[in-house]
Amino acid sequence: MRKPIHITAPRPTPEEWAKHFPISKTSEKALQVLVDEFKAMHFNREDETVSSIEPEKRRKRASAA
Amino acid sequence: MPPLPDPIGVFLNIPYDEEFTSLYIAYIVGLCQLGFVPHLASEIPGGDRRLSKIINLIQSCRYSIHDLSRVEMRVAPTAVPRFNMPLELGMTITWQNLHPSHHSWFVWEAEPHRIQISTSDLNGTDANIHNGTPEGVFRELSSAFWRERMPSVPQILTVYGLVESTLDSIFMRNGTRNPYDRSVFMELCRLSSSLTTLFFPPAKPAV
View: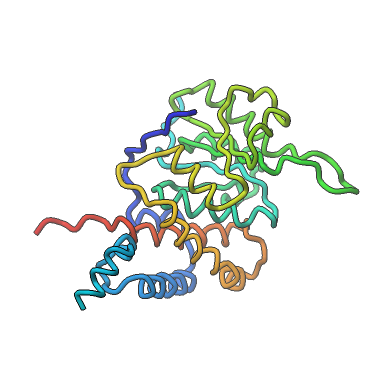
């Protein structure tokens, strides 16, 4: 079994991603709508991450409400 | 010495066929989620010979993934084996032998032991077996590479679901039905990369 390679290079920033994958403004807007919809579907608050929709946390949030 | 490769660049040596589309999207989503920048031969415009483009891409990437799961005979009347993926793997192995610190390559397959039959010279190489499923691709990516903070396989699957479901609208916008077209590849990568901050948002600057 091959040992996993430890990646220490930083993840690209949003600006760097955009440089790697240039697309038209129209496409950019269309994709942004999708991303926003996806976030709205999976997040209750804007600053939360998907990890926070784990069942345990969801249960706690529901009981707190 | 050649210039250093992009430390997060990954050259994807995959079949460009319709049946492979779901795994192709899985590679894009999985690599972006792990903080890698995927590269395909079709992404480079211009009139250079295809082989020159591929060699340049391999040399510019620190890693490459060679998916041999569809190295098989085409159906009649052109019943010839598909040699492109093994050819590109051979070029990569040569490059890595010349500059071991510049490149690492991986062989991926759908079934265990298949490469021992198709390419027996690779005996002794541990292939990553993805079982022909997106989940398998994510599992194998997570076992081939690791970072301090990595999304889980179910988390990557969630993102994959969204990206895969947008393929038709990406096709429509770009006037094509070919998922491997440069414009479609760019949009798939851009969407996948836009979703990388969901699990690990960039650190907020200290106040």
